[in-house]
Length: 223
Image (tube, rainbow, N blue to C red; front, side):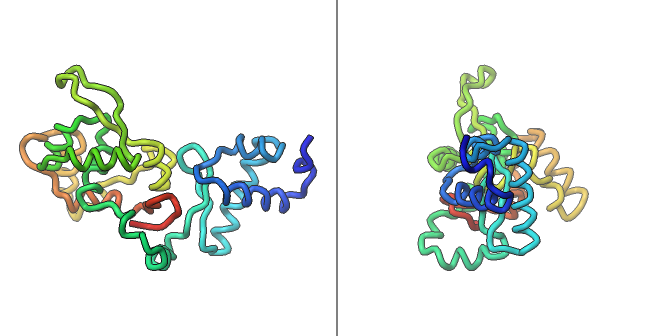
């Protein structure tokens, strides 16, 4: 029996903080519970308490549940400070084209390159390859209905870096539309209607990811 199991709640919280600080990836409550030799339910409760404590104290960091685990992130209010401090930050930003392409894949997955091209109106092969290299997009297989074309979808790293628990947490793009006509246009684009007719408005579709915190190389921050 580990000595951690006899620690007071505050000490256990400190131990959890230490484990989270040295973890480069999200860690599940059961995994953290195993490291501290406590019940998973107790660990989940302590993590939830820490999350609330950080929020109420307006700390410079947050504890979030993303991609099936828990991880510390910098607070969105201080992203400008972090961005100015990290000298290599510019290399971590996603370009407009990358955000557009990632948005199409995130909302329309599984999707082929041709479908992405049809929605964006431009060839996106190079951008997709870059997103695969960044670990945000992966190959899911091949589509027999489209000549065995490769189909793509987002990864757990995408969920982690955008602070999402699952793709069900993606924001409703229609909230960014200024009027009903624009909302209808967005609904048609995301339902794959008229794909070959006209490209989507890049400024509209990119908005869905611009307001989510992108952590770049995993150290926290915004793009």
